[in-house]
Amino acid sequence: MSAENDRAFHLERAEHCRKMAEEAGDLAVRHLHEQLAQFHEAEARRSAAEMATDQDLI
Image 1: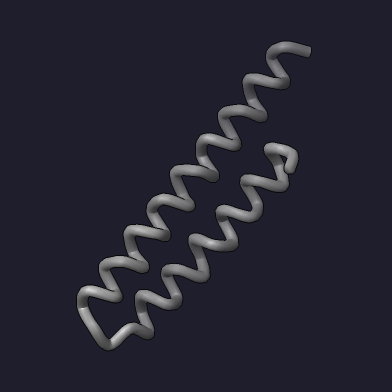
Image 2 (image 1 turned 120 degrees about the vertical axis):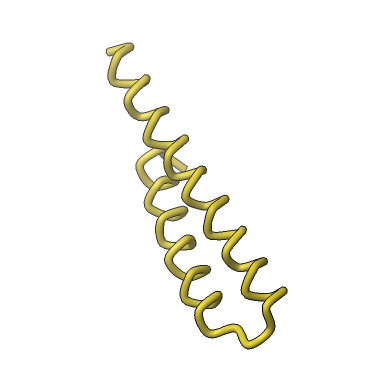
């Protein structure tokens, strides 16, 4: 998966996790979904950094 596709995937998953967190009735489940959203956001940032590094190498 390219860095751009990877970034898009993680941003989409983060959005989905946030939606699931909002819909969760159980606080523990809400917290878990929020943590997953944060993970996916961090992965999206990492992918963006990889894209920037790749551009610097060209």
